[in-house]
Amino acid sequence: MTLLDRLNVYEKLMRLDKPIGILLLLWPTLWGLWLSTAGQPNWVIVWIFVLGTVLMRSAGCVINDYVDRDIDPHVARTQNRPLAAGLVSKEEALALAATLALLAFLMILPLNRLTLMLSVVALVLAATYPFTKRFFALPQAYLGVAFGFGIPMAYAAQIGFVPPIAWMLLGANVFWAIAYDTQYAMVDREDDMKIGIKTSALTFGKYDVAAVMACYGIMLAILAWVGVAARLRWPYYLGLVLAAGLMAYHFSLIRNRDRERCFKAFLHNNWVGAAIFAGIALDFLLRR
Image (cartoon, rainbow, N blue to C red; front, side, top):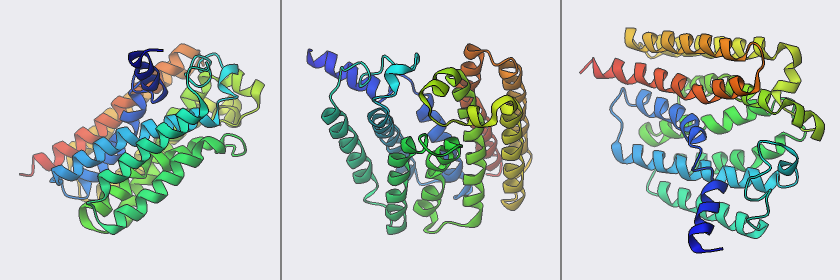
């Protein structure tokens, strides 16, 4: 295998060719960065978090594939992943994950002590998430905490402490993650049932579509509370209304549980995160 071939394999192992995970991790972090500073974040910190998000999501993908290396060959959607296909050794994967995590940690070294401490928690969450699929009926909730932990870190980095509103934002992200990752799990329902791993799609059963929409509703309710607590104005709520419209579209995609349409709904959640961020950013921009 040439060097270029090896790099292409590493790119697939880190899922850089599928940026949806980066975006779903990045949007909540940007919510926190903007809300914690009333729309005037430190741009050095913003870039540290953006690059750190890419690195940690990549490390998380490698860890996930390492943990699932004996499961992925039995799932149609994952059987061609580099580890499952034998294109990368276990040792290579672990070395790559460690290198990515180390680079992410080095990037946040200039930040304050609280942010560094929270980064350790974020690393533990990312590293342990793949194991929750073995015993926890709702691993998507754990994923929501892991994917949303950039929120308290953003507050810590920008203002030196983590107020209650940051934890409310994290809670909203947990319900969002349950919603979009249940859509993702609906694609693999039959394979997951055969190999015996836990997913929200299996846990919710015939109520999966209702559960997705309920989680969307709870997410929006929490975000509305955040808007009141932060004294946000109409652009923010317009963003929430737009997000609600997108969620209604997702219902039209998933209600018949067609695999391709469920996956399309999952991917489309990028626009939900973007709509909410646009509302936050526009709210503060119009105040200047």
